Amino acid sequence: MADVKTSNFIRNIIDEDLRAGRHAEGIHTRFPPEPNGYLHVGHAKSICLNFGVAEDYRGLCNLRFDDTNPTKEDVEYVDSIQEDIRWLGFSWDDRCFYASDYFEQMYEYAVTLIKKGLAYVDDLSADEIRAHRGTLTEAGVESPYRNRSVEENLDLFTRMRAGEFPDGARVLRAKIDMASPNLVMRDTVIYRIAHVPHHRTGDAWCIYPMYDFAHPISDAIEGITHSLCTLEFEEHRPFYDWLLEALGFPAGERPRQIEFARLNLTGAITSKRKLRQLVEEGHVRGWDDPRMPTISGMRRRGYPPAAVRAFCEEIGVAKSNSTVDSAMLEHSVRDELNRNAPRVMAVLRPVKLVLTNYPVGETEYLLAENSPTHGGQRYVPFARELYIDREDFMEDAPKKFFRLKPGGEVRLKHAYIIKCEEVVKDAAGEIVELRCTYDPETRSGGAAANRKVKGTIQWVAADHALTAEVRLYESLLRDIPEGEEEPVHFIDALNPHSLEVLTDAKVEPSVRLTAAGAHYQFLRVGYFVVDPDTTPDHIVFNRIVGLKDSWSKVK
Image 1 (cartoon, rainbow, N blue to C red):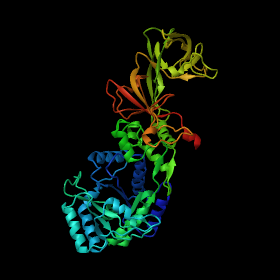
Image 2 (cartoon, one colour; image 1 turned 90 degrees about the horizontal axis):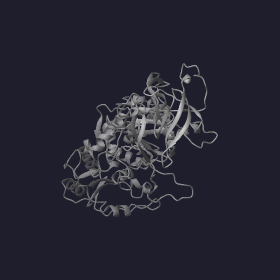
Image 3 (cartoon, rainbow, N blue to C red; image 1 turned 180 degrees about the vertical axis):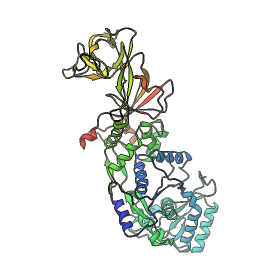
């Protein structure tokens, strides 16, 4: 066994199994997504857990698509799921499977249950089945079709497969116990009719197994040792075990289902139905919109995969549901980028600054550090006309404002100390230019290089700067003020300010022709990534996270 990471109850179970001599052939897990949408941050936790456990114990992890509901599934989702897993740094090697691989075997297993008197064809409608199920305090009512003969059930099930009946006319149900305290065990439906083409099997089938039936059988066929599921499947575990026993899988070889708490993140929507609604109604630009909590959205936002894995490791694996502060995820992202993102200077809301005593037409190149972690230097052009951020100047500044103000001094990062001498405004009273002087002796190596001022600001040379589009993202959901009722519909809780687009940001020229996905820290601003919308003539940056780390203060 490999050295394991932080201990948790799942690893404790596996350790006990290995000590008891079980699973000598090795630990085998699986990640079983349904290809009916893009994966979200909650799935990232499951991916890291299933593939991570397999890695830690030198075992195997299968990728298995639960493609049992063709009405909602699409090849687009299959491809996106595979891309997400690879991006997180995991591989299934040659073990990519589909529940549809086993449709014929599942059908035969259903026939086996019928022959054993453990399944029957029911003519009740979905609403009638629901009404017969009973409640937590009242037993269910047996279907009038429950005691059909084996021969009649086999005939009807064969005709269901042949397509003789319309959708909803009949289902196949397991025959268990309508008085069970567990509602799942009250003759759960295991097959339904659906005359819908399947993205892999075409028109070969018009009946499809339910997830509760397909999941344990797929696990058993693939030799899964530990079937890790989220907590909502805990009440389904008795059926999981009942089915494998009823089908005669040897006790020592059956997979074991273990439930863990799903990931709930503050400010994040983790319902596929709601995420699909956001996409289809145009509230976001697509499944990979950087405001979306999908893995593809996080990737486009600029979250490094190592940070997402570190976050999943940090939150751990628990037995009870809870909600994790999204600041914790941002902390992991910021921590990773702080170590690895090169530093550049950018001005998001530019105002021109002219150094009146700097030679006209001259450009000098100043050395700047690329990264405090990895070192390296670059040359940054400096000239008479610069841009600084409007937020770094205040005409009527309070006492503790240590950036630029009339008559005040600041240091330009990597350059000189400057002093504001004049403010130029247009006819509307808007500031259009700041006229300053610079102290040539304050450059590194100069006679007054060590002269101290309280403020340091970033800048870019006007004639050399790149104009960039910068997309500033905030939470997709707005904060609900104390005392205000929660909206009935989640759409009403969307943040109208979740995206601000700046079209005239100025960035130093070192980022020219950078590939999409490249990360940077814009000094004093935040962390940014080059968006795929970038072209050679138009660079687009997404803000990943700001510099402020609220989670580290909590810790």
